[in-house]
Structure formats: structure tokens, C-alpha cells
Image 1 (spheres, helix red, strand yellow):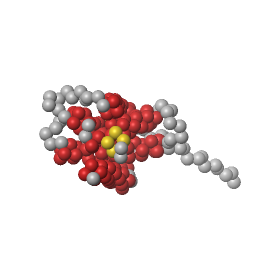
Image 2: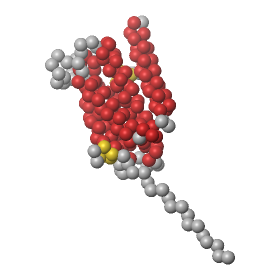
Image 3: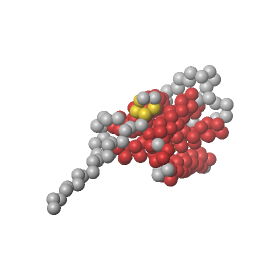
Image 4: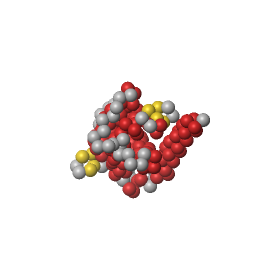
Length: 198
């Protein structure tokens, strides 16, 4: 009897990128993170040069917040940390969108890294909004609010990219990242406060 060869199973087609309003989530992420990069680049320049912040809101306290003890984390200017983070998110998003910027990363690595970076940005923004509302009562900081908006927008874009069905696999990891970020910020500011009082 003749043996019939069974054909090898066809490889599964590549997963289609998710999209919002017809634009891929990686393009949205790159654009939004690019805005964050511009904002934090401007604030980093102000912080490093000691320049006065332009505050478009009348009676705003943009300079008060930028010159406060809360604008430094472990001795590093907070806008500089944000600028580096937004830069990494922008580069990874462009890589996910087809640019070959960072060789050796597969799609899942990029998507998971972007989700965790967006989680850390959103956690830090929530922390700083709490600080703004408790330590700077009556102060309006347009840069703080726009940065929080950018961070939360990135977070929701990345959640949309992963999808609610698959996000359950990463919730524990996201919670761990959120706790680590919140504890690191709390530790940074509690040690700075202790040094100031000492």
C-alpha cells in the first residue's frame, strides 16, 4: 500500500496589529510618547539650566512645582527620567511599527515592555497627581496635568493593544511594577524629607 504523506500544518498567520480609528496602536503610542518626549525635553532643559518655566495658566505654579523637592528622584531631575522613558517608548513603538531601530527584539518582547513602561508612567503620574493635590494645594501646573494625560493615554493604548482577554496573564506583573514604582518614589521623597529636616 502506498503511504500518503500528510502535509505539514501551515504556520499560523502573523497576528494583526490592533488599531484605534484605523491607525495602529504602535503609531498612536509613538505619536503620544513623542509628545511626552517634547514636553519632558523642554522641562529637562528648564531644570538643568535653572530657567523660568513659561506657564500659560494665569497664576499658575509651574515654576514652583519644577523647583520643588518633588522634581528630583534619587538625585536625578524628574523631567530627565520622563524624557528617557518617553524616548524608550517612542523607539520601541517605532520598532513595533516596522522600523528596525533595536535589533534582536521580537514582537512579544516589545509589546510587553511597552505595557510595563506605560504602567510605570501611569503609576508615577497618579502618584504625582496625589502630591500635586496634597502638597501644592491651589497650585495649577499645566505641565503636570498634560504629562499625566499623556501617561494615562499611553497606558490605555497599550491595554487596547494587548486586549482584555490576554491582559489577565500580565495583571500580576503590572501590579508588581506599579507597587515597585510607588515604593521607589515614596522612598525617594521620604529620605529627601529626612535629610532636609536633619
